[in-house]
Image (cartoon, rainbow, N blue to C red):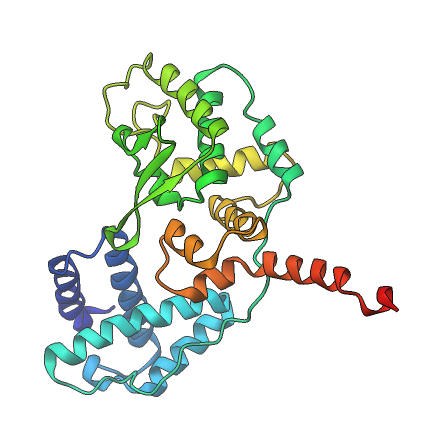
Length: 297
């Protein structure tokens, strides 16, 4: 029962929509506020938002940490923080989260795929059928351009330029960027587009067509990647792992942090550092072997 909290959550939703936030961002922020409201109604004596104190937020964070990962708790905390930032300004009341800090997320190397695993993954989609050609093109584009799953699903036909080997991507905050891809990916896309032109849904603007009467959604892409991963003997494969892998090899092969940030659509250097951590470790080990003091004496 969260009736006392509902009006403000609905106002928060309207605020986000008026600011032209993306549908996904709105869902995340409103969902977090709703989760917190339900917890307040079930676990505290707070009758409305004015009763919330910093310790309530801390207790909620502890509750989340007891059942979910630190990363999830951190994301939820930051989303609730957005709600209270709006609420405090809207009603001129103290922000109960003032002075609080989000839960720490332990740093750990991001899992990436080896070149042998990538080859096995592509092998699962070999063939001349429509689905095989589509899945090969998707996998190749993910390996070459490191797109987010939502970005990939949102591509339209006009976003791909095979002559210049570039794709125009609409990322977070609806910011557009242009990302290049290689000759083999261009060939895979060309083969897919020829097969696509013969499909019943070829008139749709969406780049990726499904087989159930519609275009391929972000959920469909996730399921396809997971299925191909299982076929290749790669357990728990998900689309974002290919983004991590792309970042890893980009840095490993000499790509700069600045270029990686622009191509990936990041504003923060910390994101590039996190995604490139495994490559940094590998470069450091190679340098350590090359500069071995023992080998020089």
